Image (cartoon, rainbow, N blue to C red; front, side, top):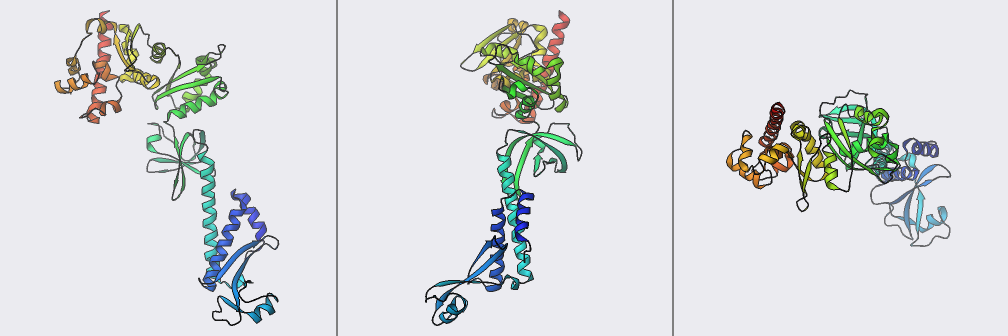
Length: 421
């Protein structure tokens, strides 16, 4: 039934990367199933692989009895002594080898299906075991196909998936194109392991720097924190215990070569590399780079800072639509309220009415936002969409419009100040 079985088992195990014991167990189960289809479900049968002869042997066990009442389960004492064991006694259980060539075509087909399924299951288990230990790694493959907006990536022995939410906006790929991703989850589902990749995860940026900067992989430099708005801008904070190493310079590389390699992989995403400091005020000031900061007022209990910048640096500190300070907040974990010197001097107590400059914010909403600590237009411009929508009664679409409108007001104010100067 299985010619050259021993060689086939060895070859299949090698080709599929499966332990040959799993293949043997699958073969034994398949033969057992075929035997039951031929002999019935009541019979007592076992299947074992005989490595010496390269054969799956099937044995039917019968109890020795002086008088046989059930031929499927019992064997006569006289026959047992004559054909199997001359010392057999009533009550003994004897195994009778079954001729597997009599099982028939349907039984053989069923056996083949069982073997195929067991091998597939083993391959899936192998893939899961291999990739679950690689979570947090950078992996690469080729774009194989697209399914409902998701990118299916050929990783070799397995497939990875980059869901829509893990893709960088405006990036496009073609079939066969090489693609990298950050392996951040492996799930067991009915169809097999699902290897989920991301190009938007902060870990992706971190892994790219680990690959480009040897000092990071050698643990001479540590990436303390990463903040991203994928496809647009990112900030990373780095530090080192070695006084002879400039962590920012090492990450930038000679003539910017290292950071440019990362930027190229991210297709133009701007990256700010800032030095981490245990002095949190200094750290926040660095995180607001490239803007310069004059003064900082800290609220340790609320983990908040009021940052005062020169009038001509306000727009730079806040960034386009609040992006720069929003990333600084994510990077440092501090709430940051940025004010210009003139605003700080002349409008120290703006009150909730200042928020009504933003189109769509009425007096009641302004007061609610003010009570939540959002005390000026700049605070709205730099607020995180998620944190604002967490306030009761704040619809997401409306909040997004407020953030954008506040950003435009800040930009206009900066232009006006610059003209006056």
